Image 1: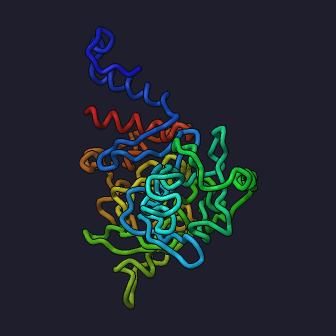
Image 2: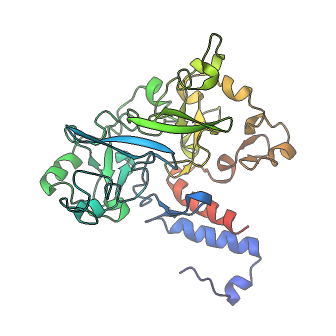
Image 3: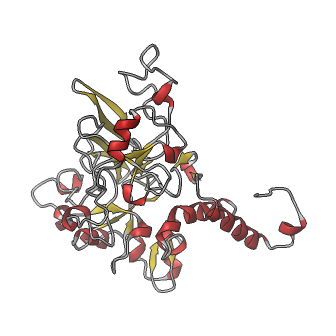
Length: 346
């Protein structure tokens, strides 16, 4: 139990120690995690045993195919965290007077997309059927799309028990080698929904610029056709370099990933979003010209002036790499809760 009243136990500790005690307690409570960080208040990324995947906090739209004749625009953060995504959004089944209808049946149940190879609930993840998926050509890390109501505390009324059992038994291909040139180095996989239709607004020089919704979900030269500086007769060398978004705590390459300015309020798989050229086998010429990049701060004093950065004793990195990530990836989401709480209590 987390006590908030004054007591001899808590009052006998210095405030900094008390923060650590509370944070450690939260790491242990990981079965249904809700993030409360800055403007991300209320995001529920599901059970730590089967966390949601995808990019949350994205301004944009995802085009969802409801049937052969009907497509609808869902939010840009579609299914990246627990929510009743279909309620009043699915205009075939989840509006007032439809079947099952607004606030009823599967329309009212929370769910999200998950990684089938990182889902250890008593009810396994369900593969999105090839003939009835919302995003027929989308894939997460080369395994197709899988979802879970269970991780969000919801019930799957959307599919018959027989069909669901069949799809849950589909091969997950967890040990299958995937193309690193597309999905990123095995030590630093890309995150997001490759093949997701729609658009996402990214922040460039204080302006919102539309990029494809699938941006960063696989290795590609995403800027070449989208970044304003990459248009014209003499685009910069980095315009043609491949990169992708990555989970900072799941990236163990010699070249560390960097904080993204494209989605400053975004969260990837429940953590602040980072990007990596190294994951895609490319050199990072883009960051070399960015004076405010953490890795370009040569002194601890300069590093500490940037809120997004932290000094690890030798170099300046994104603060999550220094303060959040550990050598135990399974604790990543839980550690993020503790990290967030410590920040809120400062």
